[in-house]
Amino acid sequence: MKKLLIMLTILFVQKATAQIEVELFFYDTCADTIAQVQFDLFDIEKNKTFYSKNNKVIVDTIGKYLVGGYLTPGDLSYYFTSILHIKKKDKLIDTLNVSTIRFVTERALHSSFWNYYKCDKPCEGYETDYYSNGAKRVEGYFNSGKPDYISQYREDGTLETKTFYLKGMNLQRRVEYYDQAGELFEYETWDNRERKTIIKTYDSNGKFLNKEIIR
Image 1 (cartoon, rainbow, N blue to C red):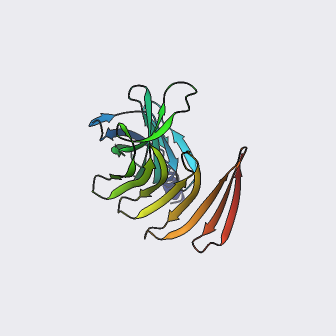
Image 2 (cartoon, one colour):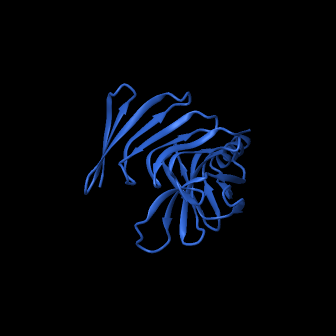
Image 3 (cartoon, one colour):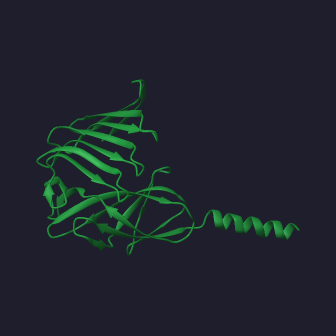
């Protein structure tokens, strides 16, 4: 009986700590093609990043992950993000739809070019993108590709984050966070200085919570 309990305990621990292999493909709506590229998985709960190798990545737990990667048509790099829910401790092979609104840079070394594109054109005015289920995924307002604000939505259509930017710059000035019901529960103010950025966090009522300095 004692040996049986030991064996069951070992099996339970092995299962609980089993690694999960993730292989992802990415559907580019704009080009109507499926690509397999290198990507990162950021464990939102544990604040930990996993990097792919040969288009696969190994993670150590189920949960909610932020996916990030690049599409590289021609001389440009299109950075994209998506959300991945890993619900089982089994090998996962999936295809994710890439948003039509992307952060774009040049592949040339030391280039300072950046913009937001809707497919192959700079974003202008009010722009939106949708999940495959028809729910809004991204919306924002842009001036010649430079964002005034960008909002991200969950797959159920509820608002998740809203980010405001300094005019004409890729610098955040305020980030708002919304709960599962789409209600504001926390926000950050970003004070971007020459050598550091000061981030102050407040609750929805404006009560100060935290201060962080990034140098």
